Each structure stands twice: as C-alpha cells, then as structure tokens.
Length: 426
Image (tube, rainbow, N blue to C red; front, side, top):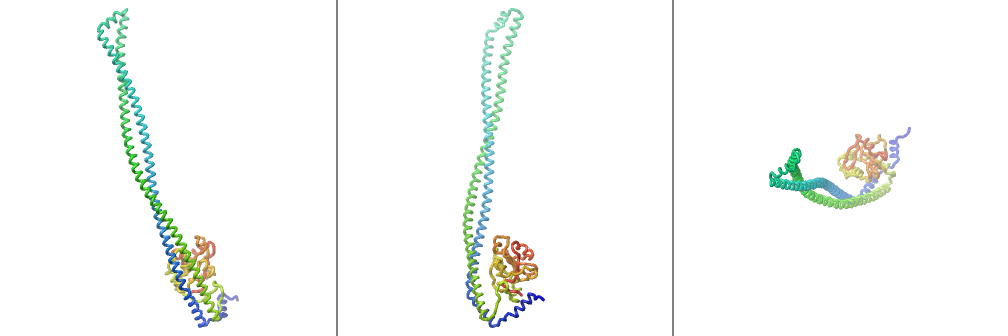
C-alpha cells in the first residue's frame, strides 16, 4: 500500500531527533536576542516609511485638490468665453443690419434728391408756361375786340372764319391744359417726395436705435472681456500651482519609495541576522532542520481564531499594499512578522492549487496579474477566511467569493495557496 503524505510526514517526525526543552529555550533566547538587537532600527525605518507615506498622501491630496480647483476655473473660463463669443456674434449681426439700414437711407436720400430735382424742373416749366399764358392773356386783353375783328377781317370765307375761331379757342384751351398737366406732375412729385422723406425718417430712427444697441453691446462685450481676463488669470495661477504640487508630489513619492526600499533592505538584513542566530542556536543544540522555506511546516502551531479576528480589525495600509496588510494581520494576531511582496509570498509559501487543500487561515496569491501596472510586477495576495470567502486589501478591506477572486486574478498565473511562513494555524 502506498503511504499517504500524512504517513510520510509522521515517519519524518519519528526519524527527526526531538528537541529538548533546554535546546528549544536556547533557540528562543538566541532568536529573541537577535530581534532585540535589530528590532529597534526596523521600528525606526517603519516610522520613516509611515512619515514618508503620509507626506506622499498629503502631496497627492493637495495635487488632487488643486486639479479640482483648476477644473472648476477652466469650466468658468470656458463658460465666460462662450458668452463673449455669443455677444461678438450678435454684435456682428447687428452691425450688418445697421450697414443695411445706412444703405437704405443712402438710397432713399438719393431718390429724394432726384425727385426734388424733378420737382424743381416741373416748377420751372410751370412758372414759364404761366408767364407765357399771362403774357398772352394780357396782350389779348389789351387788344380787346380787335383780336376778334382781326380774325373776321382776315377770314376769306365763312368756313375760314369758323376755322380761325376754332383754332383760337383750341390755343387757349391747350395753354390751360398744359398748365394743369404741369401742376399735376408737380403735385405727384411733391407726394412722392413726402413719401420718401417719411421713409427716410423711419430709417433714421432705426439707425439711431441700432446705434444705441451697438453701444450697449460694446459695453457688455467689454464687461465680459474683463471677466474672461480675470478667469484666465485664475486658470494660469492654478496651472502654476498644479505644476508646483506635481513637483512636490513626485518628490514625496520618491522619498516614500526610498524609505520603503531602505526599510525592506533593513528587514531583509534583520531577517538574515535572525536566521543566522537561529541557525547557530540549532547547531549548538544538535537539532536538524530541512531547507527550503516553502516546505517548512510546524504542525499545530499558531492561532487560527486570532488570524481570522485580525482580518476584521486590521485596517488598510493604503492602495497597492495588499502584502503589507497580510503581514499586519499575522503580526497583529501574534503569529510572526512575515514580510515581502505578494510575488515573494507566492513563491515561498503557496505550494498548492488543489481546492480540496484550501483551508481557513491560508494565504491565497498570484505572483502577477493584468489588472494594473503594479500587479504585473508584484501580484496580489489575500487571506482565505472560510465559507468560500477571501479577504484582501484593494485600498480598503473587502470580502469576496473565492471563485470570483481566483477568476479575477488568474489571468497570467494560476492562483495558489498555502500557510504563510510555513506556520499551520490551528
């Protein structure tokens, strides 16, 4: 019968020399001494990281606030600029209308001048004809009946007499009709001139109204132009402020990354020192240990309830710090102080992708995912808390279905799980 993994583990335990209480005490004292010597600098680095993170967050908040103010100022500028454009368009339309009015006034005035010239000509004709008729009537009056006698004497026959009298009457009637025609033409021209002058008066009034409207719109345009200048000044000021805030944020973010890098280097140095101290203690006690952090397990150690409780009470350290939250949970639960990014935890402690082996208290991780740029490099990690639920930090602490979690983050590498630090929780 093929031995099960559990049977093999038990055989390994039987073959592995047991550790005496004295040796165990030496190991604990050695590790405690090493941590005592190096723990204080790590706390100092942690404080530096916290301060740098707070400064970076403050700079980011200031940049976001300035951007919000800039957006509002730009919107106000755009609104005022739209008003100014509308006023300018209205002004241009009204200017065209006034130009058309002036053209009509010019045309009507030309017609008035032309009509007046005709009236003057008709009046001259009328005066001339009245003079001629008056002279003729005066001459006829002075001649008296001689004129009729002259007509009678100069007639060769009765028929000739009748014709001479007829023509004399026609001449007198023609003179009268000619005068009446000239008078009628002049009166018609006078009426035409009066109508044209009425039209010109209306056009002059319209021109005056349009001039007043143009003056009002010019004043309004100047007021809006002043507002636009003020809004533009506000936008330029905020643009300069944004540039300054962006520089401050970049500097703060660089300082935060530097502090984290120094803290991580110190953590690794301390971890190496602690490992060396522990190895020295084990060597002096004659105990043996298996190499390979991902295969080391200590059956039955650690408090599952403490870890699960810490999951609900440990706050988010911020967006992008999923592994830091997991480390804080285990530290708050008193189950070690693991470090590293999600990709480190994945490589070191996540040895299984068998769903039947997923247990509450295990970490579940991917070393890379395609949801954001940081995810490609650092991956993502959470804690399985049972009931098909994973808790993780995505800027806030959430609970999500394990199947959904695996489906979401397994776009590049498959999700895997295991005991963080090799400590089996019970």
